[in-house]
Length: 117
View 1 (cartoon, rainbow, N blue to C red):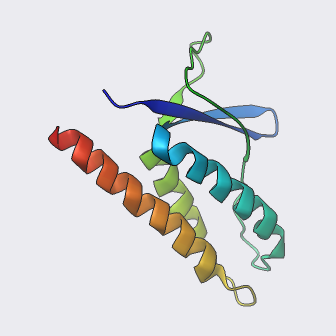
View 2: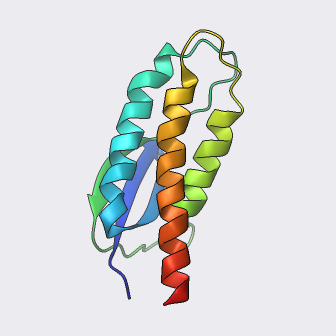
C-alpha cells in the first residue's frame, strides 16, 4: 500500500481534508499557496472561493462522522473545473490552469499505476 499524506485546507470555519500520495502532497500545498497569492489579481466577476492550506500530516483519524476525506484527484478535478470556468480578460489565467492541470495529470497517472498494481 502506498504512503499517503493529508493536506488540511481551511475556508472560513470549514476544514477540508485531502488525501494525497505522499510524493505529491507538497505540490498540492504549494499550488494552493500560489493560487491564493494570485486569486486577488483576477478581474473576472465569478472567481471561485479558495480554501487555504494550513497543514500537512502523515496520519489522520477523523473523530466526527460529519467530516470526510476527499481524494486528491477528486479535489484537483474540482479545482480545475472551477478555474477553467472563469472568464478572465486581464490576467494570464492560463498559467494557473497549466499548473493545476500538470498536477492533475500526475495524479491521474499515479492512480492509474496504483490501480494496475
